Amino acid sequence: MVTNSQIKWWSRGITLVVWTLAAASAAWWGLRASVGTAVTAPPAAAISTNEPSADAGAVGRVLGAVTQVSPTMPVVNAASRYALLGVVAGRSEGGAALISIDGKPAKPYRVGASLEGDLTLQAVEPRRARLGGTAAGAASMVLDLPPVKR
Image 1 (cartoon, rainbow, N blue to C red):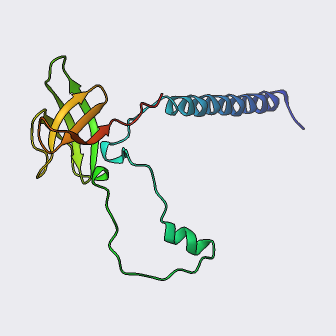
Image 2: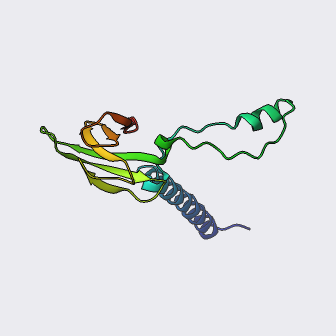
């Protein structure tokens, strides 16, 4: 036979289990909400200014085209070797640009400085840098900063 004291212990035990589950649920939702608020910036090496390109031969083979294999070297666009990561444009002719060459860590270059071989940083503008053979000649290459994502 069940006595009055046994009923009290059963109700206390059930109450304890219910409150433990409620506290665990509140803690789980609190931790889940706090994880979503952390914002981290991507590493500098992960930022790419080049759009992905498809290999025309590979796409043709997938679509069923018959191609002949020829041992040719891939053509590298000179502008694709350089990535503009930042500029400091002054009101006068001065300024500096942060340029990465061949995916290596970026280095700062002042206007008039030689980048690599025969290229010179001719001018910097907001979000743009002009490169050319000489400091006063025509620009042979224009590097733009990637668009700002909002």
